[in-house]
Length: 305
View 1 (cartoon, rainbow, N blue to C red):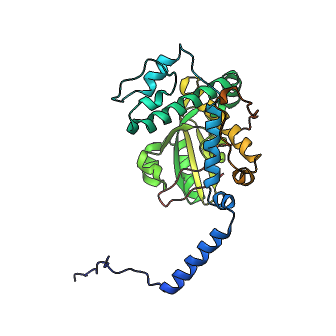
View 2: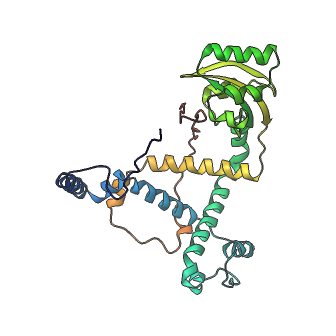
């Protein structure tokens, strides 16, 4: 017997609310927000923190300039993909000579280039030592994972892999309950620091082809096999990643030491016409902790470290 399914009438709201209650609640919330000092409101909404980050970026970028030798490469980067003819140099108010529609894009690129130079100058002497400190965590791995709920089932699968040399891919596709069953059990490539800490601990001593005993994490039991290890290399991409990590850690430490509400409430003062010659703030590096998590399963489960 055919079953008819009533389609939802999108023209009729599914939820019925009392308009008077809605208006009263909205008015109360707006009044409470309006009663707050403006800087406090910005902080509660997360706007002040974003503005503070942008102000820090601008202040750091303002500490550098480009030499005459650097300017041709900088101009090429600035005008990449633009139709307007580039200037011969960046002397004077060169931005005012650019058509107005292109000024925001050029200004953003100009800011990014100066910020990158400031970061490179600040951290170049620290990258080698920081790389040695982070090298183990920067190693990239591909590993196999079979994820089940039952300890007994996990032990049976593990024994089949160890004693019977069963095919890991086949078992993963058949028995794994996570999304990895769609990728033949493979997870990665990713930095070895990215998985859940318990997974990282189990993977660290494994050689390629080794299988770890069943590992329980919350409601899951995992069987892991190391598929590929790629040692970290200090190439340009890694150098930029480490530079950004050092900068972000210093930024977080600097902002944590500031009373943003008090600073935002102060009357604004125009910046110095020559900010690069002004005093700079000494900020010290604070190590960054990478977020850890178990790759999500098909039911959306994640396990935070």
